[in-house]
Length: 332
Image (spheres, rainbow, N blue to C red):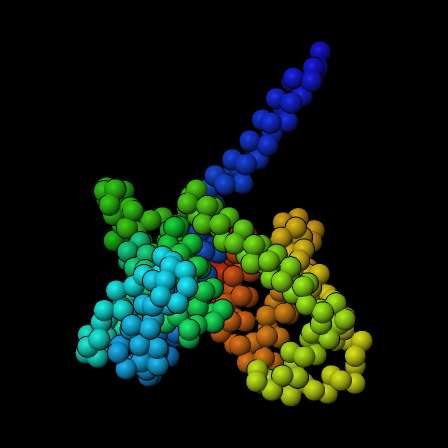
């Protein structure tokens, strides 16, 4: 006979089991591996751009010199934080260049998936040092590429679509030791892949929720003019979209739809029924930002980040079909 105590126990047990399934169900690494390539390439691009005028960003002659950068974090201009970096103490242009070339090399290895177990945390650490040094000259792209690298280093993101996978398949054998298997892991389901996926998914939900709440505090998001002000702002405009003034209902609808999507992203992205619509709208929003507002790197990385909600089985199957249909496979 059922009792209140047994009902409560079953309810609690169900939630504990659901929590365990959410975090600790092994997951394939294929989606993370694709994100590693995109994130690594974009991070490499960021460092190459810095290299075009490196001493303007780093060193004593930079726009924000070492002492000023340090004071932005040590409490001289306000609150002290944990944003520390050894780059505050490097003033030699030669040493700055050696460090930057090393960073570019590590990041390229991370993007290619070479020694990923080592190069992924190293790429994240080096990027973090640059972030703390370059306070005042950063924007959203820098934060996005950094936190994606952080989550990717938690999982075997180099176990497929990588140089590591080629080394493993060519030289691996069952007799190899534990270190070999750790350094060149199999592309099999792991708990670490699932944890990295869940953390990035939740991080995205938090970003959109607070971004939407912040927008909701502004009058233009309620009166429907926010999208118009964005596309008509000459500071960001990469395409002339001022012809939209003829269609006030269109940009008003887009304004309200964007606000709704951003606030409720964290709820609607989880159900399978609504997830495709949420992700398609995400692509539309961020592709619009990339094409019409000139923020190509930011828009690209946000579209890539939303890929974390794509099933690794679907990625594996889709890329497998592409390989099977390529001329090299003989099945074209």
